[in-house]
Length: 269
Image (tube, rainbow, N blue to C red):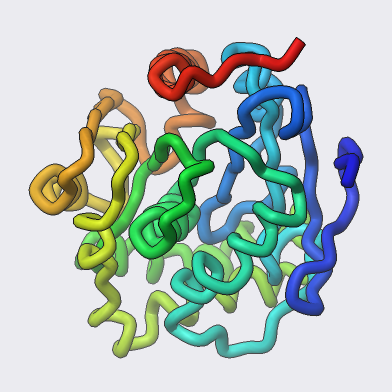
């Protein structure tokens, strides 16, 4: 299937909004972008274009169900929603776009989904992971920040700011916020998947990340048997690709280049 520059994919009876930047999977490696808990295709801004230019890879990004212009989801979301995305949606999506070789690049919730996928699927097409501000278990700092987001949504301007990006902004926000603030979610922990990841990992983390501490990185370094590289960015919070785009792009493109050379991926003539 030839992938258009943008449109919708039908996956598991849901319409998922997508964009494709740069060369297609049959021509060059593909970077698959997985957004954060309140993200979508549009909120990556021009980062995909910059990434494609810097790496000579294709960049595929999509809005998960409940986000952007994708189909809404039933609420409340199951607390297993990240596991479900990694196990039931992402495998079908990669096949649907003709994914041949490349990396998964996830931010926040998207990083967790990438880790679950790589730790539960023997997918030899995936040569590496880029995890931006990942979380592998629940921390008090993260819960406090998510509770602050609820206050900002209900009494501040957060709902108005998000509404320009999401067709059903309440579906997007409640699906994420209510799950994380459910007392049962305190037991959420995906560290078991880390030992089964067999590809190199780059973790990009802001030193001032309000959603997670260095314990997340220390856990990855302790539990993973694969190489784990860490880039800590001073003065940066939870979104390095928006707060320090040039440095983040430099770090990621260097890692992608080394993974590509190690796997002998070459751009087709």
